[in-house]
Length: 174
Image 1: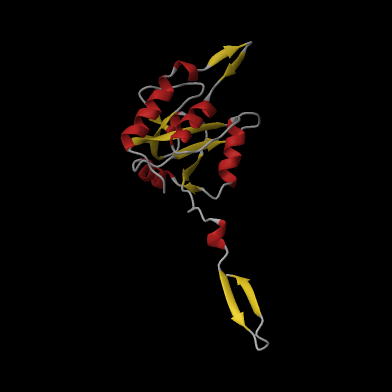
Image 2 (image 1 turned 90 degrees about the horizontal axis):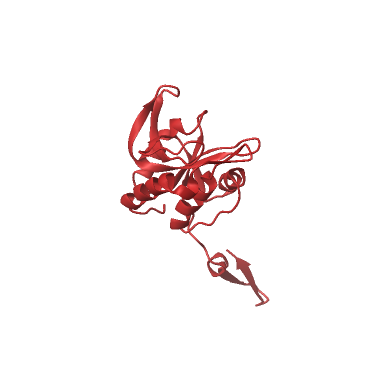
């Protein structure tokens, strides 16, 4: 699992919620939020590149073998080790994505469980950080970035040879 120092992850979460560029704004009576941009910034530190709105990013995460769904307890442990853990909720038009942050969990009365902190950039950007229960109306799905080892084409194709009675040689991919 790829991790970064916990202090850096905490600083990233705090910086996105206070960044003026990520604050919600009203344009022609439409509220513009920027959860996708804050996620892209933090994911970039882990060497990841995402483009598009939250629903597109969420779909990519769900389909990728490098992301694994986790429960709230495991999410808290993993983010406190410096792993990239996200909370996601697809929407009809726009979804929501928030990076979890290291720190103590907070009790959620509405979900009856301990919730990790998150760097929420959305309708409300909270500083100091709050539990993920403040960022989502319904319990979101949580995913950890857990990349599989990269295998080269040369590693995939190993050659085994077998001699046959006619002394021809056949090659097989193992």
